[in-house]
Structure formats: structure tokens, C-alpha cells
Length: 264
View 1: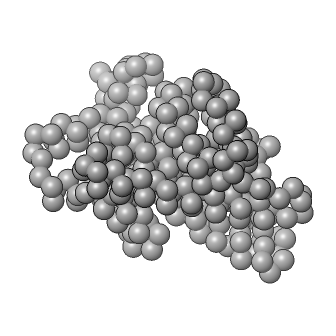
View 2: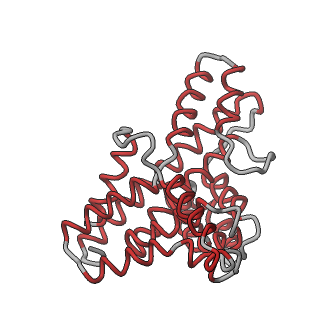
């Protein structure tokens, strides 16, 4: 059931079947606005503990409802609905496609325009390929891992925290601590094991300081990244292939765990 739900959600996102407006961020924004309008609730919004709990309250409610009224068909439908809301970044995917097309035909101006659209993390030192590694983690790998660990409520809770990353950056960084290391270990397995494994072992015990750099260090070690400054698109292509292989690995592992009865 879990691998089926994840597989269907990824196909729907890939084929752009869901409506353009079908994404979590606007819903999270309306939920956050409603919380701010309630005077008796608003005073708790910036609290280190109660603020994040209020934000993920819909996920907690969903977990309770699924526990009280569990059925396989309803669970699959809920899983797919939640995953299609939380997974994916359609605008960046479109920009990525145009970025590679422009690079292939040598249109440097268009490449620069689409590279700018692909910037997700504010760190200007990150290349386009490195930005894509972090973007893939936030919108695909981390969602998938929390879904595997905690089901639809876990994926929804992560998506809500991600949508307000500027409000609770430390909370989100701790929430991403485990998925980041699982995702990075996937890079080790699908990339150059001997080169990436020492880097992963160095990253594992680290705290939450600069998570994007921790993940990117492993990704770059796991793949032969071109160093030609004039061909940044080549680096992006290599790293995109790496994260795609990692997502396939996640699906294969979940399918295998399902066959063994470890997950349902």
C-alpha cells in the first residue's frame, strides 16, 4: 500500500495531472493566516514548542482520524492526496527542463535566466546543480522518507513545516536531520561508494549547522562532477541523474520491505 501510494503520487506529479493550484503552500498560508487572526492563539505562534505544534495541527488531526477510522482503501486515497499536495515543485521542474534545452542549443542568456529560477537556497555560493540537490531533497526525498516512517500524517507535517521554513528554521533542521542522512546514504549506494562513504561518516555526527552543505558534500563525493566553470549545466545534469537514481532506490527499498512485511 505504501509503495503503491508513493509510486502513484510520483507518476501524477511527473505527468502534471494534478491542477496547477494543487499544492500545499497556499493551503498552509491560509492556515497560518487563520491562526494569526485568532487572538487567543496568536500569542503562541512564535513559541519554540507550541508554534510548530499549532502549524502541524492538521497533520496531528489526520493521524487521529486515520487511527480511529482505518480502512485500506481510505488510507490509500488519503496517502495519494497528501503526497500529491506535498511532493514536487512544478515551477522549478519546468525551469529545469528549459534550462537543459537552452544549454543543449548553446543559448547562454536563457541558461542564466532559468538558472536564476532554479535558485531555492539563498546561499549564492551554491551552483545550479547543488541547488537542485537541495531542492530534490526538500520536495521529494524528505517527503518520501517521512511518509515511509510516519505515513501521510508525517509527510503532511513535514510539508507544513517546510512551507514556513523561515519561521522555524531550527525546528525544520532537526526534523530534516534523520532524512538528510538517510538520503545522503542513498547517494553513497547509488554513486561512488568508496569516495562518498568517508564523507557520509563525517556528516553523520554533525548537528544542524548548514544542512544543505552537509548533503551537497556527500552528493559531490558520490558523483564525478565536471569542474569546467563554462559548463555548469553539465554538473547539474550529473547531479540530477544522481538524485533520480536515489529516488528509484527509495522506491525499490520500500517495495522490498513491503514484500517482507516490514511496511504495509
